[in-house]
Image (cartoon, rainbow, N blue to C red; front, side, top):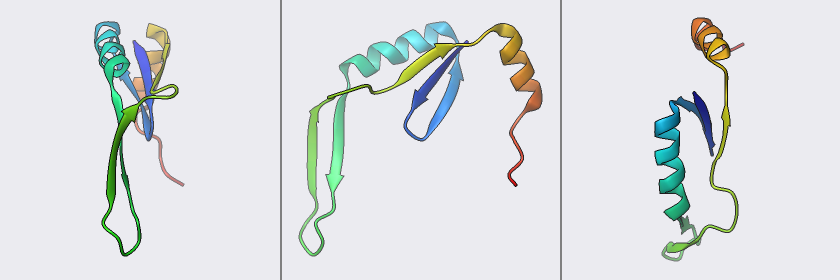
Length: 75
């Protein structure tokens, strides 16, 4: 399995899906809406100037153990 780290979270997918995500993100552009106070917002699309997402492989054993643990409790 592959952990895909994008802003706001990490997600587990199989290797084939991770490759699809990597290929899509390699072609992605940034989109940003800028708030301007009392003025109309501006919208921007521009090339990615850094890392979009990170990925790392986890073992089947770690995946199964984490899957058994389920969602962590909030304290």
